[in-house]
Every structure is written in C-alpha cells, then in structure tokens.
Image (tube, rainbow over all chains, first blue to last red):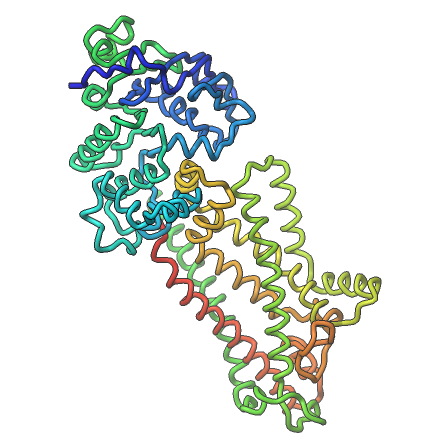
Length: 266
Length: 283
C-alpha cells in the first residue's frame, strides 16, 4: 500500500507541533499536543467525532482564529519559524499552507477566475507574464493537476456554481494548488462527494504527495489506511499515538488505538 | 383539541389575508389617487420646462427643475451614502470587532433611522448657518446622505451576513486579506442584496421633503452648481398642494406621479442590471 517514504523517520519534519492547546470559551479542546508532520507524503489525522481533528488541522494555517471565543497556546514550527509568533504574517502563512474544505465552496466567479484568483491577489500573474508564460497556461496546468481540465476546457468562462459537487471540489483543489502551497491541509475532503468523485480526489492527492506535504483529516479509517504514510490519532483532545502508517495500523501500541482500530470504541 | 387547532388555523389564515389585503389596498389607493388626479394634469411641458411666470397660479411651465433637482440631490446623497456605508457594513460583518462596539454602532444607526427627517433638516440648517453656508445642493446632499446612511448600512449588513462563513474562509485560506475578500468575493456574492439596500435608501432620500426644506431650499432654476439652492419633487408637491387652485393641486399629483415612476423605473432598471452579474453567485 503506502511506500516507505524516506522522509518519514529520517528527514526533518515540515511542521513541528509543540505543546499546542486550544480552548473554545472554557472547553479545553486540544490538550498539549506534540507531533511532527514529515515533509511530503500524506499525514492523516484520525479519531472519533469531536476529538479535535479539525481543530488541530485548522490551527496549522491559523484559520481556527476566524471563529469567536477561541484561544490558542503553544507553538507550531514551520521550517523553523513559529507560526504563532506575533511577527507571522497570516496571509503569507495561508498562502504557504493551503486548505481544501469538506464542502466545496467555489468563489462567486467563473471557473477560470476561481483558479486565477489566488495568483492574481499575490501578483503571480504578473510574474507569469515576466517569465514568458501566461496565466492561461497556469490555469490549464492546475486544472489538469486537479483532473478537471478535460471537463471544463470548453466553458472556462462559465460560473463555477454550475459545476457538480464533485467537479467543484476538484476546482477547489486546483484553486488551492494555484498559489503553490508547500503544505495542503484537507479537512474530510471527500465527505460531501459520491464514491467516484471521492476516489478521484484521493488519487489526485496521492499524486500530489510527491512534492507537497499533505495533511488530511478523515473519520474514515479505510481512507486513512489507503492513503496515509503517517498517522496522528487523537482521542478527546489528546494525542494518543502517532507514527508511520504501517506501524500504526499493524502494530498499534496504545490500548485505545487498538480498541479504536478494532471498532470497539469511537 | 382538534377543533380548537382548526379554528386557530383558519382564524390566523383569515387574519393574514386581511393584513395582506390592507397593505396591497393602501398601495392601490395611493397609486389610484395619484393616477386619477395627476395623469390628466401631466403633459410634456411639465416634464421639459421649468416654471414660467405664474406657474403656481395655473399658467404654463413645468417641474423640470424639481425632477433634475431631486435626481441630483438623491443621486448625490446615495453615492455619498454608499461610500460611507460599504466600509461600515464590512467592518461590522467581516472584521473581528468586539460585540460591545458592534452593538453600540448598531444602536446608534437604529436611533438615526428613527430620527424624524425634519430634525435632520433643522440640525443641518443650524450647522450651515454656523459655517456660513446657504441653502444649496451640497447642503441637501450632505443631510440626505445622513438620512440614507442607517437604512443603507443595515440593509448591506444584512446582505453581507448571509455570506456563508466557509466561502469567506476559502478566500482567506488562499492568503487573501479581508479587504481583498470583501471587494472581490463578498461584493460579487451579495450584489443583489447591496443593490436592494441602495435602492431602499435612494427611495427614502428622493421622497423626503422635510430634510431638504431648509438645507437645499427651492428654486425655479435648473441645478447648475453645488453651492446654489436646488428644487426637489417632494417640495414641488408640497408647494403646489398648498395653493388654493384645483388646477395647480392636480399638478401636485402629477409631480407625485413623476416621483413614483422615477423610483419604480430606477428600481426595475437596477434589478435588471444587477441580475446580469449574479450568474456566478454561490448558493
């Protein structure tokens, strides 16, 4: 299934989470999380509903703080820089750490403009011109990467809202990739999709992991075992176990992990 | 029990029908009266001429001064109000403002909304005397824009609050700032709502007589300068109704008809225009 990626144990981690705590008002939702997310490959965050999977994911691009009454304490190191340091530029962080949401929300623009949006706001379209490429080719490239090009190449000016949910999710993937993130966070990216579309997204992500670090939240154990190279298991806001997927699934150490994998709890 | 429920149901159903009938009936009554008395008095001269000598005694002339004056006043005030309202609506809805501050701003706007327009007029007039300004188009625009502001902000805020949070987040998670998100995503997504808010405010502005009475004044001339007095349709209605001549009073109804048609026409046109830009909206 998942190949043994050299980075899992040897190379330096892409993200290092250090004593991360999150409170929703008085509810202590994440309790002292320590974890490392390896460079490249797919890291899956798993656990039962309400265990803090999405909270942990959204703390990695600080989208969590868009909500109200949320308090975060701790550090998350991205290439040696603490993203919770006050000098961190949120927009730069979110450009480098992209997000694929559970339900696709295209922007109220055409298919083309959805993919071009990020490049335009970051001035990458100007850069494209300078390099003798153009935005059109970039848009095509990312739509191809997301596996949507063939279906939309004749109607790029059409509203993105006219696409099916499965197509919209691939459009959101293309849109996220177009700003060239080094990390892509995926929050149950297939939960709103039919099985065929879901499989498509899974395949795209597996292709992407060669040169992008992917962190995926899923409540589907089978999806995690299909895709993940590395697993983080959360239980009631605490990190129970994390490690390479093979080891995690075949030889879990913690009794709660064993019970969860056997389907006795969660 | 069953009979009681049935009685309740039919009682409220009748009540709803009666209420609806009252509202629609009032509208028809107003339109009917204005059409019945105004339409015969309405002719081309009224729309294309300014008042000639003796117009208010029933002689020839028209109300072009008031038509153009009202369009300048309400148009100018609406532009000023949009420039002020959009940032307020975005600030209240998209930025993390403390609840206390938000509530306070909303309360202030609601009080402004409830303030009678004659009070706006009186305060505007006092300030203008203090500043040494005379009744003018500019004075009218400023006071009218303040009159339009609360209705426009609350309308826009309502529209912006309907934007799904996940849509905002998908823009933020591409590294877009709140400003970029507001003007590139939220404006497109909420355009019909924003247009409705603007139209409501424009309707309130163009129909108001009391606030422009002292601040914009009245004149038989066409508007030419921001610093000169300007005529308006509500005041044209008011002055003509106040004369003892039935023929002039009929012209007041004709002026009212022009006012209603203007608001209606603008409303329809802008809705048609904005619907051309709504095909991308995410539902």
